[in-house]
Structure formats: structure tokens, C-alpha cells
Length: 240
Image (tube, helix red, strand yellow):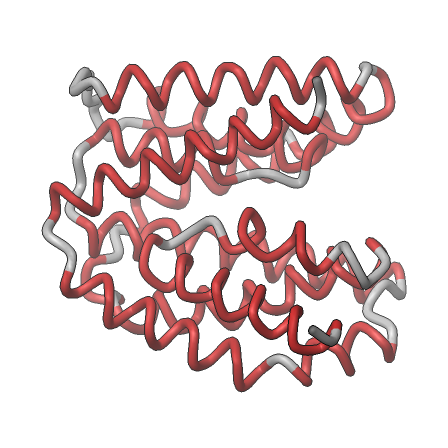
């Protein structure tokens, strides 16, 4: 199988998953893309592709978006991004990934058992979610788990879950792309490779969005927790 075809399959699978669940594109696609593309191309490409994914998902469930819940989380995520970057240089990345991955798996398993403790939608509850997300974004390029676990804990319906996640990730995408433009990361190769996969991205996201409409709420919640548990498991296993 050629590298172009393998990349197309990875993008298709990742976009189907994120179109349906609202997250986990990088979890699915990145390991395959890194087999034949350098990290300097894959990372910015994933951000660009995620931008398109999040626009499509947000457009599909725009009516369910509650930006009052997203804004405090986003503010926290921006505030602690520099802290995450400091952790990246100050701590042993392997040990930190093991700790974070293990914690994600533990919380996911507890929630899969049926335990939840919904929090009030107040600044004191929402801001810390963003603060943790910003730390993980700066240190591990992984902002999603705290927000996914929070929304799962709140028991929101699947359309609000996907809309709020898409709005949060889209905002981070735009912020990150601005930084990439400033630092000259978006090279001609990055843009060319990204453009080649746009048709596959559109198809996969469309399939995922249609699939989300068919999933019962209970199945959707279990699927999201399984995906986030898989994220933590990959972090643990790849750093042991």
C-alpha cells in the first residue's frame, strides 16, 4: 500500500471518528501519518485538518452550542498554555505522559461504571477544566481529555457535547494556526499534503456526522468514554 493511500485511509478513519464523536481525530490518524511523514509536517497538518473538521461538526449542531459554557474553559486553556510549555522543558516527558495517561484511564473507567457527579455551570467549576486543558495542550499537545471527561460527567446530550467540543477545539485551532503563521511552520509541503487530503476529509466527516445521528444517547456516551480511555491507554503503553 502506497504512503498516499495509507494516509488517505488514516485521514478517512480519523475524520469519521471525530465527525461522529467530536474528538479523537489525532488519536486515530497521527500514528499512521507519522510512519511516512516527518513530525514537522504531520503536527501542523493535523491542526489544519482539525480546523475543517470542527467547522463541519459545529455547523451540523450549531443550535446546541452553549458558548457560555465554552468561554470560561477556553479562557483557562489560553491562560495556562505557557505553563504547559514550561512543563515540557522542565519535567521528564515520559513520566508526565505516564501519569496523565494513567489518570485519564482511571477516570474513564470510573465513569464507565456509571458514577458521575455533575457540577454547576459556574466560573469556579468551568475555569479549572480549561486550566488543566491548557497545561496538557502546552506540554503534550493534548487539550481534549479534560473537556471530554467534564462534558461526559455532566451528561449533556450528544449534540451539545459535539457542539461545545467543536467550538472549543476550533478556537484553539485558530489560535494555534496564528502562532504557526507567525513562526513560519505552515510550509509549502504542509499546505500541499493537507490539500491533497481535503476530499477524504470531507467524505469522512460527512459519514461521521450522519453516523452520530443514528447513535442512541446511551451508546454515544459509552463510545466517547471508550475513546478517551483508549487515548490514555496509548499514552501509558507508548511510554512504558
